Length: 140
Image 1 (cartoon, rainbow, N blue to C red):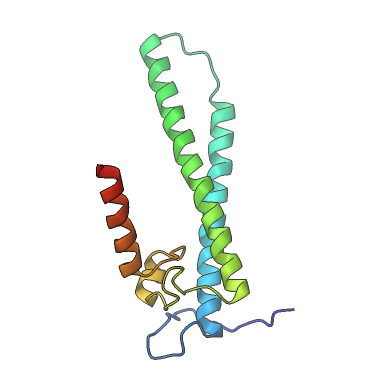
Image 2 (cartoon, rainbow, N blue to C red):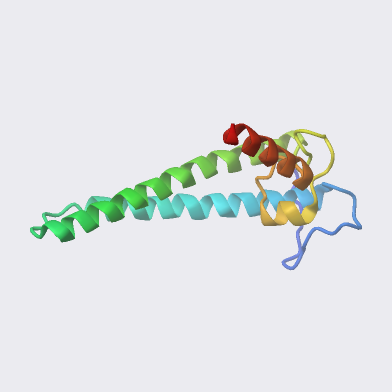
């Protein structure tokens, strides 16, 4: 069983400490779990709103507007569902000791990048190269 890590309220990972030490791993694990809980709570709210919102709207324009809003909300929730999967994958990497390292180079991903995008799997350089290659293939 994993031992409890004390994490001060104001803790932020710093470059001058060992990369992905226990405190950093705990920090990112908590950040990921909090994000996931927010997304799940939002999904529950959406489902309830969609179930409550099924009503007969006589005006055609109002009904079309309502259906457009619902479609947009469902697309947003689908993106968030995919995001929850990425968060779960990041939490698995934390558990397996692979979190914070670039999938392409194996080098550490910067703490600033991980703090801004905790599901990142590539360093900024590797991500930029990946996006450039994608753009070149898309433009063909």
